[in-house]
Length: 103
Image (cartoon, rainbow, N blue to C red; front, top):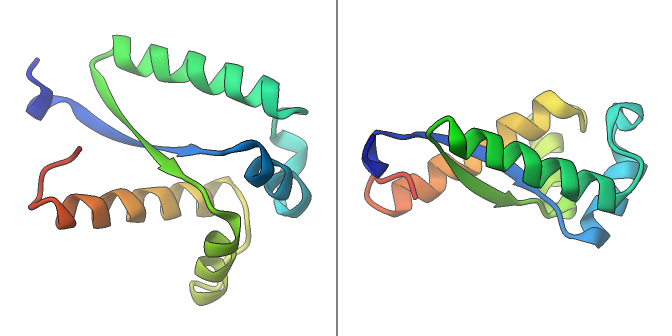
């Protein structure tokens, strides 16, 4: 499978300070890993699994202030569904800005 044929996945990526904000503000915080270290380990494991299945991972750097504004504009709450929609939208914008090529 060539790089152009791989399915692109938008994967929310957090820095430690953003992870802490996520844990404090998410309506589904009880479903998240307890610590940033646990999250990062599990995220890297998931990324490896996706890659072995031939998927291309696009890390979307989550900035919680920006995401909060997006939630307000889109009348939604900070939960896994909204975070996924946000990440996909960011990837689509990135793709448009790169002439239609998924990075």
